[in-house]
Length: 451
Image (cartoon, rainbow, N blue to C red; front, side, top):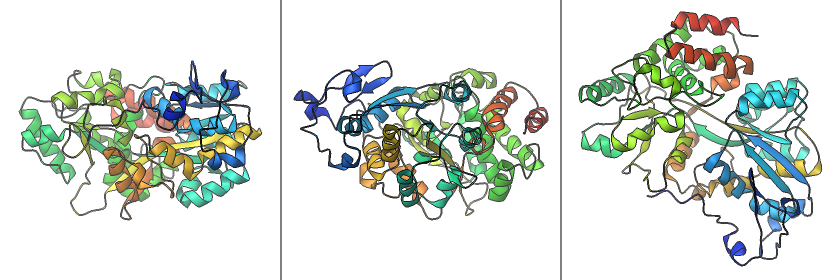
């Protein structure tokens, strides 16, 4: 099924065509309400879902790492809320979010709300006194909408500092069903079968894997996903959580074993790197571009989060019989537990003005989850998310995996570690590793940086 055009403004199209709603473009996206630079006539909108925040007004600055088309979809998802409440939402998506947010906080230039994808960074913002605990309304929404595990990621010293937003699966291997079918390949059910498949593809003259670790100031994070998935498969859940908590050191044998497992694929010159070059090219290949050679046979597989579907053009068919789709990274042995690693964002407030509280309450509601989901390329773990709103096959696949009662879900380890390690020296260490540093040297460097 072709992906729906995400640039269509579904909710406000009819009203806008009639001239009853004016959305004013800014440098950061769309502003709604009087503060957006134009008048808004909400007579043709159903504002009843937003009645509790009626006439709030004011301006809310939102800062996140979500940008480009995904940022546009976010702004579309809250456009009705903004129009009906008179709140101007000024959104900024940045590729340097992880590096710049701490600088802004320490410099007294905090946004009103930030969408933080790392519990470690959230905990730092709370411990440093920058973040404010959630309002009673947000707390009620979170307790009703998410499991205790999700709540725990945003809790610091007994206080809730954030509400979950989106969710993703990062144990997903993208592939081309057409390429697999044309060459008689089957989806591997074990790690060894995946290696055998990689050997077969390599012998045919195609590099079986595409890999890209470049991501601006966040360069390196895709590499940590490889290590985390490997550790879950070699040592299991207990060791994974002990590693996050530093109950075992970063350079423990279990972690070295995970690096060695990943090494067999992503530092294997026979396997990588699609059309981009050899192993060294991984460090400078952007994760956004890395998976695109799947479409023309430039590579056969690409480990990347479920959110990657947004990188494909609208005429690319995503599905089991389409141009691209995904399978779950297999376990070491058939019939064993398949660990799922993933992540998401948490909405964190740095001010408690009424308009900020109102916006946070809406973002923590089931209404927002369904509004955003209906636009495609997004999944939430909110218990009120209606599966009927997930038209995109990737979203359906992700939701099916995440909601499977047999799924054992693990939050991204580097995001859950202290930010000085998980989203700093671990990221830089993985780049050192992929460009030639020994596993032992990298593990020792990261371990020595643990606070």
